Image 1 (cartoon, rainbow, N blue to C red):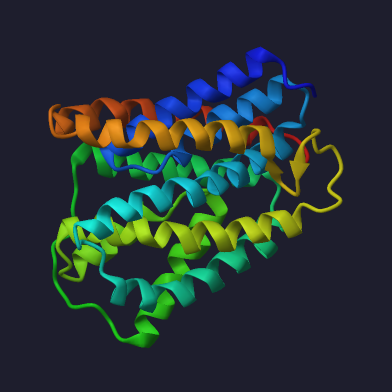
Image 2 (image 1 turned 90 degrees about the vertical axis):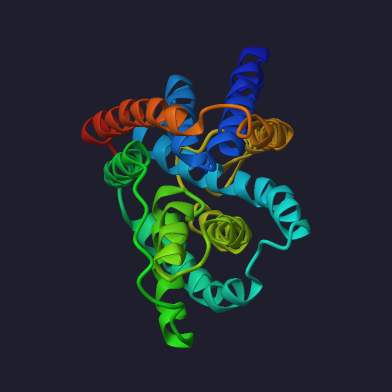
Amino acid sequence: MPLEPLLVIELALLGLVTGFLAGLLGIGGGMIMVPFISAILDARGVAPGLAVKMAIATSMATIIFTSVSSVRAHHKKGAVRWDIVRGLAPGIVLGAMVASLGVFALLKGSALALVFAVFVGFSATQMFLDKKPAPTRQIPGTAGLLGAGGGIGFLSGLVGAGGGFVSVPFMTWCNVAIHNAVATSAALGFPIALANVAGYVVAGQGVAGLPPHSFGYLWLPALVVIASCSVLMAPLGAKAAHALPVKKLKRVFATVLYLLAAYMLYKGLTAAGT
């Protein structure tokens, strides 16, 4: 599969859009990237089930780069709760490895597409209703954080998301201020991405039908182009968030997410193979 100019343009546009929206709305780019990367691979002859797996893995890998720039900005403002990061990280790594090394490799791509569709549909509903859990308790102890981290890491590994849609509600439920929860979630994106990507690379070794320039389930051209463009646009999206009616934009974007969820649902029902 040659790296034709049209492919580079498609991936660059996807990176620019996802980076801007991530900064503007505080969402992980995976919910946009996965459907589009899978469609791009599908159009280039990759089996639909394998295309879904590669899209999820590649989307997760971009978070390694985007999370670093995001965390630096949040850390400068003193917003990251590093005590929570230390508590959740071990569970996150364990959950992520179980998902990416075991369950991800065993599940068919069609099943993963259905899981992704449900996840995006749920996230869109939360965004549309602007729902936030009522703070009712304090951060749990070591065992509780280990279990919560395991759940966050596992879910993120299956759907290629940074975990923010689980970790932010969890932290606000535990009486962590919303700006601290968002900043801490950004910091958690790095161990989530690193552990999952390691699993995707190992699990994807020797898989039949991988396109050129693949490293396990990672599709390197998409990773390089999207990550480069999204890192450039995320700060601009964050600046725009202060000038635009974000609540209204979230409702519009939630509608787009419903369409993407419907597409992945269709893909899951029709995909064949792994």
